[in-house]
Length: 401
Ligand SMILES: Cc1cc2nc3c(=O)[nH]c(=O)nc-3n(C[C@H](O)[C@H](O)[C@H](O)COP(=O)(O)OP(=O)(O)OC[C@H]3O[C@@H](n4cnc5c(N)ncnc54)[C@H](O)[C@@H]3O)c2cc1C
Figure: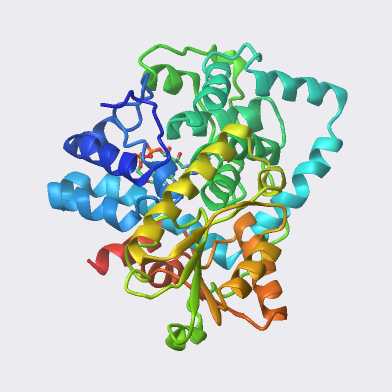
Protein backbone atom coordinates (compact mmCIF):
# COMPACT_ATOMS: atom_id res chain seq x y z
CA UNK A 1 0.00 0.00 0.00
CA UNK A 2 1.19 3.50 -0.79
CA UNK A 3 1.92 6.01 1.97
CA UNK A 4 -0.84 8.57 2.65
CA UNK A 5 0.59 11.41 0.61
CA UNK A 6 2.02 9.55 -2.37
CA UNK A 7 0.59 11.15 -5.47
CA UNK A 8 1.96 8.86 -8.16
CA UNK A 9 1.11 10.42 -11.53
CA UNK A 10 -0.50 7.38 -13.15
CA UNK A 11 -4.04 6.18 -13.77
CA UNK A 12 -3.19 2.92 -12.00
CA UNK A 13 -2.36 4.87 -8.82
CA UNK A 14 -5.59 6.85 -9.15
CA UNK A 15 -7.65 3.67 -9.41
CA UNK A 16 -5.83 2.17 -6.43
CA UNK A 17 -6.51 5.28 -4.33
CA UNK A 18 -10.18 5.23 -5.37
CA UNK A 19 -10.49 1.60 -4.25
CA UNK A 20 -8.79 2.42 -0.97
CA UNK A 21 -11.12 5.36 -0.33
CA UNK A 22 -14.47 3.77 -1.30
CA UNK A 23 -15.06 1.87 1.97
CA UNK A 24 -14.71 5.23 3.78
CA UNK A 25 -16.90 7.27 1.42
CA UNK A 26 -19.97 6.72 3.62
CA UNK A 27 -18.23 8.57 6.51
CA UNK A 28 -17.17 11.47 4.31
CA UNK A 29 -20.01 13.84 5.20
CA UNK A 30 -19.33 13.50 8.92
CA UNK A 31 -15.53 13.66 8.79
CA UNK A 32 -14.58 15.70 5.77
CA UNK A 33 -14.03 19.04 7.50
CA UNK A 34 -11.42 17.68 9.91
CA UNK A 35 -7.86 18.41 8.88
CA UNK A 36 -5.76 15.47 10.05
CA UNK A 37 -2.20 14.36 9.34
CA UNK A 38 -2.08 12.34 6.12
CA UNK A 39 -5.71 13.34 5.37
CA UNK A 40 -7.24 9.89 5.85
CA UNK A 41 -10.86 11.17 5.89
CA UNK A 42 -11.03 12.64 2.36
CA UNK A 43 -10.37 11.05 -1.00
CA UNK A 44 -7.19 12.97 -1.99
CA UNK A 45 -8.18 12.18 -5.58
CA UNK A 46 -7.99 15.74 -6.91
CA UNK A 47 -4.51 15.65 -8.52
CA UNK A 48 -5.64 12.71 -10.66
CA UNK A 49 -9.16 13.97 -11.34
CA UNK A 50 -7.82 17.40 -12.33
CA UNK A 51 -5.71 15.75 -15.07
CA UNK A 52 -8.55 13.41 -15.93
CA UNK A 53 -6.32 10.46 -15.20
CA UNK A 54 -9.54 9.48 -13.50
CA UNK A 55 -12.89 10.81 -14.73
CA UNK A 56 -15.44 12.56 -12.52
CA UNK A 57 -18.01 10.12 -13.85
CA UNK A 58 -15.92 7.15 -12.72
CA UNK A 59 -15.60 8.56 -9.20
CA UNK A 60 -19.33 9.28 -8.91
CA UNK A 61 -20.35 5.91 -10.36
CA UNK A 62 -17.99 4.00 -8.05
CA UNK A 63 -19.28 5.81 -4.95
CA UNK A 64 -22.90 5.27 -5.95
CA UNK A 65 -22.37 1.60 -6.73
CA UNK A 66 -20.86 1.02 -3.32
CA UNK A 67 -23.24 3.14 -1.22
CA UNK A 68 -26.81 4.46 -1.23
CA UNK A 69 -27.19 7.92 -2.76
CA UNK A 70 -28.05 9.39 0.67
CA UNK A 71 -24.84 7.98 2.18
CA UNK A 72 -22.57 9.55 -0.45
CA UNK A 73 -24.59 12.57 -1.54
CA UNK A 74 -22.17 15.02 0.09
CA UNK A 75 -19.16 13.38 -1.56
CA UNK A 76 -20.87 13.29 -4.96
CA UNK A 77 -21.82 16.94 -4.54
CA UNK A 78 -18.17 17.82 -4.00
CA UNK A 79 -17.11 16.02 -7.17
CA UNK A 80 -19.64 18.13 -9.10
CA UNK A 81 -18.17 21.33 -7.63
CA UNK A 82 -15.22 20.86 -9.99
CA UNK A 83 -17.60 20.70 -12.96
CA UNK A 84 -19.56 23.68 -11.70
CA UNK A 85 -16.45 25.87 -11.39
CA UNK A 86 -15.23 24.79 -14.82
CA UNK A 87 -18.62 25.45 -16.41
CA UNK A 88 -18.81 28.87 -14.74
CA UNK A 89 -15.36 29.88 -15.98
CA UNK A 90 -16.04 28.66 -19.52
CA UNK A 91 -18.84 31.22 -19.56
CA UNK A 92 -16.79 33.98 -17.94
CA UNK A 93 -13.20 33.47 -19.16
CA UNK A 94 -12.30 37.02 -18.19
CA UNK A 95 -12.23 35.94 -14.53
CA UNK A 96 -9.06 34.06 -15.50
CA UNK A 97 -7.50 36.58 -17.90
CA UNK A 98 -7.95 39.38 -15.37
CA UNK A 99 -6.15 37.29 -12.77
CA UNK A 100 -3.28 36.51 -15.17
CA UNK A 101 -2.90 40.20 -15.96
CA UNK A 102 -3.14 41.23 -12.29
CA UNK A 103 -0.47 38.94 -10.79
CA UNK A 104 2.72 40.63 -12.12
CA UNK A 105 1.16 44.09 -11.85
CA UNK A 106 0.21 43.60 -8.18
CA UNK A 107 3.57 42.03 -7.34
CA UNK A 108 5.36 45.08 -8.73
CA UNK A 109 3.06 47.47 -6.88
CA UNK A 110 3.61 46.04 -3.36
CA UNK A 111 4.90 48.46 -0.73
CA UNK A 112 8.04 47.47 1.23
CA UNK A 113 5.85 46.46 4.19
CA UNK A 114 3.58 44.32 2.02
CA UNK A 115 6.59 42.75 0.36
CA UNK A 116 7.97 41.57 3.68
CA UNK A 117 4.50 40.28 4.71
CA UNK A 118 4.34 38.39 1.42
CA UNK A 119 7.78 36.89 1.95
CA UNK A 120 6.83 35.78 5.47
CA UNK A 121 3.57 34.25 4.21
CA UNK A 122 5.26 32.30 1.41
CA UNK A 123 7.96 31.00 3.74
CA UNK A 124 5.55 30.11 6.59
CA UNK A 125 7.05 32.72 8.95
CA UNK A 126 4.07 34.88 9.93
CA UNK A 127 3.79 33.48 13.47
CA UNK A 128 0.13 32.52 12.84
CA UNK A 129 -0.40 28.93 14.03
CA UNK A 130 -1.74 26.75 11.25
CA UNK A 131 -1.14 29.25 8.48
CA UNK A 132 2.64 28.78 8.61
CA UNK A 133 2.28 25.00 8.68
CA UNK A 134 -0.03 25.02 5.63
CA UNK A 135 2.35 27.25 3.66
CA UNK A 136 5.11 24.70 4.25
CA UNK A 137 2.84 21.68 3.72
CA UNK A 138 1.72 23.05 0.36
CA UNK A 139 5.28 23.48 -0.89
CA UNK A 140 6.46 20.14 0.53
CA UNK A 141 3.56 17.93 -0.61
CA UNK A 142 1.75 19.71 -3.49
CA UNK A 143 -1.51 19.34 -1.60
CA UNK A 144 -3.70 20.98 1.08
CA UNK A 145 -6.98 19.93 2.64
CA UNK A 146 -9.98 21.99 1.46
CA UNK A 147 -10.62 23.46 4.90
CA UNK A 148 -6.96 24.48 5.23
CA UNK A 149 -7.20 26.09 1.77
CA UNK A 150 -10.19 28.12 2.98
CA UNK A 151 -8.54 29.22 6.22
CA UNK A 152 -5.28 29.99 4.46
CA UNK A 153 -6.97 32.10 1.78
CA UNK A 154 -9.05 33.96 4.34
CA UNK A 155 -6.05 34.79 6.54
CA UNK A 156 -4.08 35.82 3.46
CA UNK A 157 -6.77 38.29 2.36
CA UNK A 158 -8.31 39.62 5.57
CA UNK A 159 -5.57 39.28 8.20
CA UNK A 160 -2.41 39.77 6.16
CA UNK A 161 -4.22 42.06 3.72
CA UNK A 162 -2.36 40.68 0.74
CA UNK A 163 -3.99 40.67 -2.72
CA UNK A 164 -5.99 37.48 -3.26
CA UNK A 165 -4.49 37.22 -6.73
CA UNK A 166 -1.01 36.60 -5.28
CA UNK A 167 -2.34 33.92 -2.95
CA UNK A 168 -4.03 32.20 -5.88
CA UNK A 169 -0.69 32.34 -7.72
CA UNK A 170 1.08 30.71 -4.74
CA UNK A 171 -1.47 27.87 -4.73
CA UNK A 172 -1.36 27.45 -8.50
CA UNK A 173 2.43 27.33 -8.39
CA UNK A 174 2.54 24.41 -5.95
CA UNK A 175 -0.70 22.38 -6.05
CA UNK A 176 -0.55 19.08 -7.92
CA UNK A 177 -4.28 19.54 -8.50
CA UNK A 178 -3.76 23.19 -9.56
CA UNK A 179 -6.82 24.05 -11.58
CA UNK A 180 -7.51 27.41 -13.15
CA UNK A 181 -11.25 27.24 -12.45
CA UNK A 182 -11.34 25.71 -8.93
CA UNK A 183 -8.40 27.77 -7.73
CA UNK A 184 -9.17 31.21 -9.17
CA UNK A 185 -12.88 31.01 -8.39
CA UNK A 186 -12.39 29.65 -4.85
CA UNK A 187 -10.01 32.51 -4.03
CA UNK A 188 -12.53 34.95 -5.51
CA UNK A 189 -15.21 33.33 -3.36
CA UNK A 190 -13.18 33.76 -0.14
CA UNK A 191 -12.42 37.39 -1.07
CA UNK A 192 -16.12 38.11 -1.64
CA UNK A 193 -16.03 38.61 -5.41
CA UNK A 194 -17.55 35.34 -6.56
CA UNK A 195 -20.76 35.66 -4.57
CA UNK A 196 -20.94 39.42 -4.09
CA UNK A 197 -21.37 40.35 -0.45
CA UNK A 198 -20.39 36.86 0.79
CA UNK A 199 -16.89 36.48 2.19
CA UNK A 200 -15.25 33.72 4.23
CA UNK A 201 -13.72 34.73 7.55
CA UNK A 202 -11.52 32.10 9.27
CA UNK A 203 -12.13 31.87 13.02
CA UNK A 204 -9.54 30.71 15.56
CA UNK A 205 -11.99 28.40 17.39
CA UNK A 206 -13.07 26.78 14.13
CA UNK A 207 -9.43 26.09 13.21
CA UNK A 208 -8.69 24.67 16.66
CA UNK A 209 -11.78 22.40 16.54
CA UNK A 210 -11.26 21.04 13.04
CA UNK A 211 -7.54 20.43 13.56
CA UNK A 212 -8.27 18.49 16.78
CA UNK A 213 -6.37 21.19 18.66
CA UNK A 214 -3.15 20.83 16.68
CA UNK A 215 -3.33 24.44 15.45
CA UNK A 216 -4.64 27.02 17.87
CA UNK A 217 -4.10 30.56 16.58
CA UNK A 218 -4.87 33.35 19.03
CA UNK A 219 -8.21 34.93 18.20
CA UNK A 220 -6.57 38.37 18.35
CA UNK A 221 -4.11 37.35 15.62
CA UNK A 222 -6.88 36.88 13.05
CA UNK A 223 -9.06 39.50 11.41
CA UNK A 224 -12.52 39.29 12.95
CA UNK A 225 -14.31 40.76 9.96
CA UNK A 226 -13.97 40.90 6.20
CA UNK A 227 -13.77 44.02 4.09
CA UNK A 228 -15.63 44.33 0.81
CA UNK A 229 -13.99 43.96 -2.60
CA UNK A 230 -15.61 45.05 -5.82
CA UNK A 231 -14.82 44.78 -9.53
CA UNK A 232 -16.39 45.65 -12.87
CA UNK A 233 -18.91 42.99 -13.93
CA UNK A 234 -17.39 40.05 -15.81
CA UNK A 235 -18.98 39.61 -19.24
CA UNK A 236 -20.75 36.33 -19.94
CA UNK A 237 -20.06 34.39 -23.12
CA UNK A 238 -21.53 31.14 -24.47
CA UNK A 239 -19.54 28.11 -23.28
CA UNK A 240 -17.87 26.24 -26.13
CA UNK A 241 -19.72 22.96 -26.52
CA UNK A 242 -19.09 20.75 -29.53
CA UNK A 243 -17.36 21.19 -32.88
CA UNK A 244 -19.66 20.77 -35.90
CA UNK A 245 -16.67 19.49 -37.91
CA UNK A 246 -16.68 16.39 -35.76
CA UNK A 247 -19.21 14.37 -37.81
CA UNK A 248 -16.65 13.58 -40.53
CA UNK A 249 -13.61 13.53 -38.34
CA UNK A 250 -12.79 9.90 -38.95
CA UNK A 251 -12.35 10.27 -42.71
CA UNK A 252 -8.79 10.11 -43.98
CA UNK A 253 -5.66 10.04 -41.85
CA UNK A 254 -6.40 11.44 -38.43
CA UNK A 255 -4.02 12.13 -35.55
CA UNK A 256 -4.70 12.65 -31.84
CA UNK A 257 -3.18 15.36 -29.64
CA UNK A 258 -3.01 14.32 -25.98
CA UNK A 259 -2.51 17.00 -23.32
CA UNK A 260 -2.70 17.10 -19.50
CA UNK A 261 -6.31 18.27 -19.31
CA UNK A 262 -7.58 14.85 -20.37
CA UNK A 263 -5.36 11.86 -19.81
CA UNK A 264 -7.90 9.04 -20.10
CA UNK A 265 -8.53 9.34 -23.84
CA UNK A 266 -8.93 5.57 -24.13
CA UNK A 267 -12.14 5.88 -22.13
CA UNK A 268 -15.34 7.45 -23.37
CA UNK A 269 -16.05 9.63 -26.37
CA UNK A 270 -12.88 9.10 -28.43
CA UNK A 271 -12.22 5.51 -27.49
CA UNK A 272 -13.74 3.90 -30.61
CA UNK A 273 -12.00 6.24 -33.08
CA UNK A 274 -9.08 5.36 -35.33
CA UNK A 275 -5.94 7.41 -35.06
CA UNK A 276 -2.87 6.72 -37.12
CA UNK A 277 -0.56 8.76 -34.90
CA UNK A 278 -0.59 10.33 -31.42
CA UNK A 279 1.32 13.35 -30.21
CA UNK A 280 1.87 13.95 -26.51
CA UNK A 281 4.77 16.39 -26.63
CA UNK A 282 5.60 18.64 -23.72
CA UNK A 283 5.87 22.39 -24.36
CA UNK A 284 9.02 23.43 -22.50
CA UNK A 285 7.98 27.11 -22.01
CA UNK A 286 4.66 26.05 -20.39
CA UNK A 287 5.79 25.73 -16.76
CA UNK A 288 7.25 29.23 -16.72
CA UNK A 289 4.26 30.73 -18.53
CA UNK A 290 1.81 29.06 -16.16
CA UNK A 291 3.90 29.79 -13.05
CA UNK A 292 4.35 26.16 -11.91
CA UNK A 293 7.00 24.94 -9.51
CA UNK A 294 9.44 22.33 -10.73
CA UNK A 295 7.55 19.67 -8.75
CA UNK A 296 4.25 20.56 -10.46
CA UNK A 297 5.89 20.63 -13.89
CA UNK A 298 7.50 17.22 -13.24
CA UNK A 299 4.25 15.75 -11.94
CA UNK A 300 2.36 17.00 -14.98
CA UNK A 301 5.01 15.76 -17.43
CA UNK A 302 4.96 12.31 -15.82
CA UNK A 303 1.14 12.24 -15.92
CA UNK A 304 1.26 13.14 -19.63
CA UNK A 305 3.69 10.31 -20.21
CA UNK A 306 1.32 7.85 -18.50
CA UNK A 307 -1.64 9.11 -20.57
CA UNK A 308 0.37 8.83 -23.78
CA UNK A 309 1.45 5.25 -23.07
CA UNK A 310 -2.13 4.14 -22.47
CA UNK A 311 -3.37 6.02 -25.54
CA UNK A 312 -0.68 4.42 -27.71
CA UNK A 313 -1.55 0.93 -26.48
CA UNK A 314 -5.30 1.49 -26.88
CA UNK A 315 -5.26 2.97 -30.38
CA UNK A 316 -2.29 0.93 -31.61
CA UNK A 317 -0.77 4.12 -32.98
CA UNK A 318 2.73 5.55 -33.09
CA UNK A 319 3.29 7.99 -30.17
CA UNK A 320 5.52 11.07 -30.47
CA UNK A 321 6.40 12.69 -27.17
CA UNK A 322 9.24 15.17 -27.28
CA UNK A 323 10.09 18.16 -25.16
CA UNK A 324 9.38 21.01 -27.54
CA UNK A 325 10.36 24.69 -27.59
CA UNK A 326 7.37 25.42 -29.81
CA UNK A 327 4.55 22.91 -29.52
CA UNK A 328 2.53 24.33 -32.42
CA UNK A 329 5.51 23.98 -34.78
CA UNK A 330 6.22 20.47 -33.46
CA UNK A 331 2.63 19.41 -34.12
CA UNK A 332 2.67 20.83 -37.64
CA UNK A 333 5.90 18.93 -38.45
CA UNK A 334 4.45 15.74 -36.94
CA UNK A 335 1.14 16.11 -38.82
CA UNK A 336 3.01 16.60 -42.09
CA UNK A 337 5.28 13.61 -41.48
CA UNK A 338 2.23 11.39 -40.91
CA UNK A 339 0.28 13.04 -43.77
CA UNK A 340 -2.61 13.83 -41.47
CA UNK A 341 -5.77 15.45 -42.76
CA UNK A 342 -6.98 16.29 -39.29
CA UNK A 343 -5.84 16.40 -35.71
CA UNK A 344 -8.40 15.64 -33.01
CA UNK A 345 -8.18 16.54 -29.32
CA UNK A 346 -10.34 17.20 -26.31
CA UNK A 347 -10.59 20.96 -26.17
CA UNK A 348 -8.66 22.28 -23.17
CA UNK A 349 -10.60 24.42 -20.71
CA UNK A 350 -10.07 28.14 -20.16
CA UNK A 351 -6.47 28.48 -19.02
CA UNK A 352 -2.91 28.04 -20.28
CA UNK A 353 -3.59 24.83 -22.20
CA UNK A 354 -6.35 26.53 -24.17
CA UNK A 355 -3.87 29.25 -25.16
CA UNK A 356 -1.52 26.52 -26.38
CA UNK A 357 -4.40 24.79 -28.17
CA UNK A 358 -5.44 27.91 -30.07
CA UNK A 359 -1.85 28.47 -31.21
CA UNK A 360 -1.75 24.86 -32.44
CA UNK A 361 -5.07 25.27 -34.26
CA UNK A 362 -3.85 28.36 -36.04
CA UNK A 363 -0.47 26.82 -37.01
CA UNK A 364 -2.17 23.69 -38.36
CA UNK A 365 -4.67 25.81 -40.31
CA UNK A 366 -1.76 27.63 -41.99
CA UNK A 367 -0.44 24.22 -43.03
CA UNK A 368 -3.86 23.26 -44.44
CA UNK A 369 -4.59 20.77 -41.65
CA UNK A 370 -7.76 21.07 -39.60
CA UNK A 371 -7.97 20.83 -35.84
CA UNK A 372 -11.10 19.15 -34.56
CA UNK A 373 -12.06 19.78 -30.95
CA UNK A 374 -14.13 17.39 -28.88
CA UNK A 375 -15.73 17.85 -25.51
CA UNK A 376 -16.89 15.09 -23.22
CA UNK A 377 -20.67 14.68 -22.96
CA UNK A 378 -20.37 15.21 -19.18
CA UNK A 379 -19.08 18.75 -19.74
CA UNK A 380 -21.37 19.54 -22.67
CA UNK A 381 -24.38 18.51 -20.61
CA UNK A 382 -23.43 20.21 -17.35
CA UNK A 383 -21.52 23.40 -18.19
CA UNK A 384 -24.58 25.33 -19.43
CA UNK A 385 -26.18 24.91 -15.98
CA UNK A 386 -23.31 26.68 -14.21
CA UNK A 387 -24.79 30.11 -14.67
CA UNK A 388 -25.69 31.19 -11.15
CA UNK A 389 -24.78 29.69 -7.76
CA UNK A 390 -23.89 26.08 -7.01
CA UNK A 391 -27.22 25.03 -5.55
CA UNK A 392 -29.38 25.73 -8.62
CA UNK A 393 -26.70 23.81 -10.56
CA UNK A 394 -26.85 20.88 -8.13
CA UNK A 395 -30.66 20.82 -8.34
CA UNK A 396 -30.37 20.35 -12.11
CA UNK A 397 -27.85 17.53 -11.61
CA UNK A 398 -30.03 15.83 -9.02
CA UNK A 399 -33.24 16.12 -10.96
CA UNK A 400 -31.51 14.53 -13.99
CA UNK A 401 -30.83 11.48 -11.77
C1 LIG B 1 -8.76 28.63 -1.99
C2 LIG B 1 -9.04 27.29 -2.63
C3 LIG B 1 -8.30 26.89 -3.74
C4 LIG B 1 -8.57 25.67 -4.36
N1 LIG B 1 -7.83 25.31 -5.46
C5 LIG B 1 -8.08 24.12 -6.08
C6 LIG B 1 -7.35 23.72 -7.22
O1 LIG B 1 -6.46 24.43 -7.72
N2 LIG B 1 -7.63 22.51 -7.76
C7 LIG B 1 -8.60 21.70 -7.27
O2 LIG B 1 -8.79 20.61 -7.79
N3 LIG B 1 -9.34 22.07 -6.21
C8 LIG B 1 -9.11 23.25 -5.60
N4 LIG B 1 -9.86 23.61 -4.51
C9 LIG B 1 -10.99 22.77 -4.13
C10 LIG B 1 -10.72 21.70 -3.06
O3 LIG B 1 -10.02 22.25 -1.98
C11 LIG B 1 -9.94 20.49 -3.60
O4 LIG B 1 -10.52 20.02 -4.80
C12 LIG B 1 -9.97 19.36 -2.56
O5 LIG B 1 -9.41 19.82 -1.37
C13 LIG B 1 -9.21 18.18 -3.09
O6 LIG B 1 -9.02 17.20 -2.09
P1 LIG B 1 -9.74 15.79 -2.19
O7 LIG B 1 -9.49 15.19 -3.53
O8 LIG B 1 -9.37 15.00 -1.01
O9 LIG B 1 -11.26 16.20 -2.12
P2 LIG B 1 -12.53 15.41 -1.56
O10 LIG B 1 -13.05 16.20 -0.42
O11 LIG B 1 -12.26 13.99 -1.35
O12 LIG B 1 -13.57 15.61 -2.75
C14 LIG B 1 -13.66 14.68 -3.85
C15 LIG B 1 -13.40 15.39 -5.17
O13 LIG B 1 -14.36 16.43 -5.35
C16 LIG B 1 -13.76 17.57 -5.97
N5 LIG B 1 -13.86 18.70 -5.04
C17 LIG B 1 -13.98 18.63 -3.71
N6 LIG B 1 -14.13 19.87 -3.18
C18 LIG B 1 -14.06 20.72 -4.22
C19 LIG B 1 -14.17 22.14 -4.33
N7 LIG B 1 -14.38 22.92 -3.28
N8 LIG B 1 -14.06 22.68 -5.56
C20 LIG B 1 -13.87 21.92 -6.65
N9 LIG B 1 -13.79 20.57 -6.59
C21 LIG B 1 -13.89 19.99 -5.41
C22 LIG B 1 -12.32 17.18 -6.27
O14 LIG B 1 -12.23 16.68 -7.57
C23 LIG B 1 -12.05 16.08 -5.25
O15 LIG B 1 -11.05 15.20 -5.67
C24 LIG B 1 -9.60 24.84 -3.86
C25 LIG B 1 -10.34 25.25 -2.74
C26 LIG B 1 -10.05 26.46 -2.13
C27 LIG B 1 -10.85 26.87 -0.93
